[in-house]
Length: 289
Ligand code: G3P
Ligand code: CA
Image (cartoon, rainbow, N blue to C red; front, top):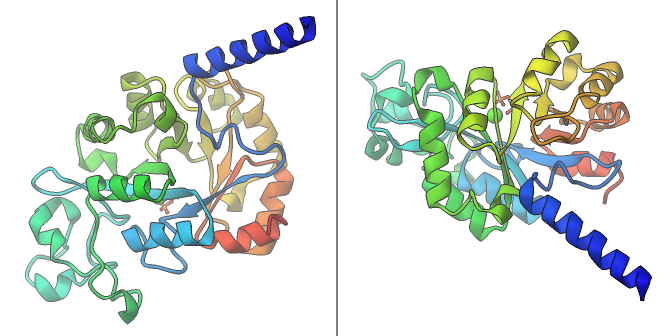
């Protein structure tokens, strides 16, 4: 009887701690096995940053997806990687006189007319650049989890506040959704802003601060996500030695790892996550099939 009371009390304490300090499922992932994140959706198999790419990730059995948010001329948040529409849409054909075809120079209605699938394959003709609202609805429908990158924030003043407002309106800032959400950026200022606006959100800095700088980053970011090319076991250990803003060791998600050898190498370094265009390849490399 006593043991049962102790167990129940311990469970209650843990539940309370979880409520007081939410962290993402990725940060609380399987011990010893990195979380696999489908980069720009399953972008090796479907056009990046489209609803088709996150559907593909879901069909492959992956719940975590990474995507990029930017803003149109008339203030709509859209999911796209480059600051120009040129590479991943037919904008040159539809708007030949509008070079260099920057996202910020086109309205949402104009972008909605673009084909964001044909450049990848005729099979995806007619695929659209999703708005962030459309995208969040599909993520929810697919029961997926989101690593959202605020891309080029210097081009879009206030995009952090606007993004958080949309996430809140879509119901993504409650306790259960916060466990399925991480926000990252190459801009430390942007990540600091997200942390200050909504301290409960799990944040990630894209880059590789020096070890001497890590204590400063640990005030506002939960993860340090570097390119895997320059990563080392020593650096991962150094990052893990710092506690982040939620009192847990800083995490490391390496990107963009698309082959077996690379996945095994960074897993051996002890990374917490692997961001990949080929999540199935990484899963096989980690022996998770
Ligand atoms: O998630 C890491 C990765 O997305 C950063 O690089 O250029 O693909 O946004 P990029
Ligand atoms: Ca990205």
